[in-house]
Image (cartoon, rainbow, N blue to C red):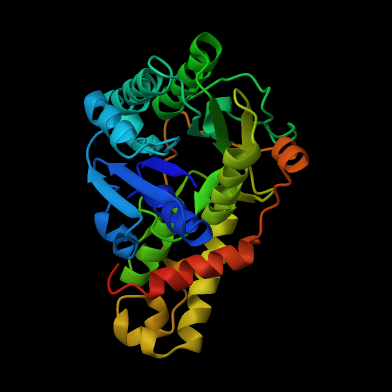
Length: 346
């Protein structure tokens, strides 16, 4: 039985991780620590809060005494660190918050973990840090995908802040012996995602009849990963990953942004053709009036420092831990659309 502390557990990936873990490991205890900033929503965890083995704590990872008290009081042996500022556009407009949360906040957690798990009576433990493929920079069209040995070349304040936090986590293993693992994942999508990222933004804008902004020519390429396939990878790392190691979690699923826009528009239009009741719920959607959602697509000026291509090579986690994504992009997109259509509002 594990006692887990999940930071950022009311955010997109963290929420999905909570449900994944509670369903798969019903004997484990799980504590979520979340500051409930704009992208965190306590209501996401309403079902989890009915579980007596789950506890929610409203607090900030920068509050080291709070983190220490949680580690001690709940006998935490596993810390899974999702909490982060993660939107590139926001990091360009206001990088300070990214430095504070992603770097200083991660260091605060590391200090709390070291003090609790190592400085007194050493305990069995694991500190798992969630990172991103953006720390590796950008790939050219014919470049091989990122591996765990790809040099870090971050191109945005967000990516730079995550790269710094990765280095701190690794340093606490090498210097102090903290039992850490790191995972760098490709672009996640799925339920509970805040509608500022591409896929949820498209879905909500289609339903409300708003323009779908596409940066530049829309040919930026990303490797897409369904959120519970990411959580499966984290699960395997926590169970059998080697402390001190980094694992890339990818979907082997590269798509250009414009192609994803077209795919989602078509899938959404088909849903309205199949279910005429949707037109009553979403009267502003073009499909409610026989028009295709692609009429909403609008090309806008590309953002500063926009990386052209990301792609993850998951060979290491596949060969050493038996990782394999369970969702295809088609099934994952359909699950995501179905979840949004089931919500009372968008």
